[in-house]
Image 1 (cartoon, rainbow, N blue to C red):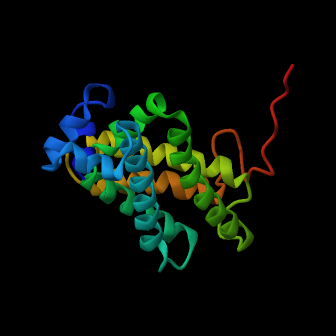
Image 2 (spheres, rainbow, N blue to C red):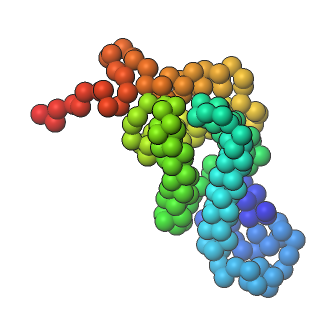
Length: 195
């Protein structure tokens, strides 16, 4: 999509409808047949790419026999997707200022499906019991920063050794393994006093 390229190369606030139509090789009249404004095409772009990303990871994890395999397949699919759509990072971050509801919706939609899958894995006793929504956002945050550092900034695929280390951290967290504080599953961890 021409809008993805141009919003990614520049920014929402520096792009005009004329820039978009020039990049797409269509007239402005054609643009208005499909979109009432620049904000409308930007909003659709964020929502469409979010849907495609979720579908891509869902398809990749469908054959996994357990949650750890699903995490590995899902993270690989995520890194693969952003390698093909590196401008998505810049576009989604711009959405916070262009349309905060779309920005929030991008992450909420991802977290909703993720939380459900994690909750189901907890019910099957494949991973430690904890709050699935909190866990989903923690894992999404890891993917976000790993992808930014090792895919977007380098313009390359995720290095195998980096991926291996990330998966070790994720497997440990999902298993509820004991850390320096003697932790365990979320149900076993002490709650800090507010005093």
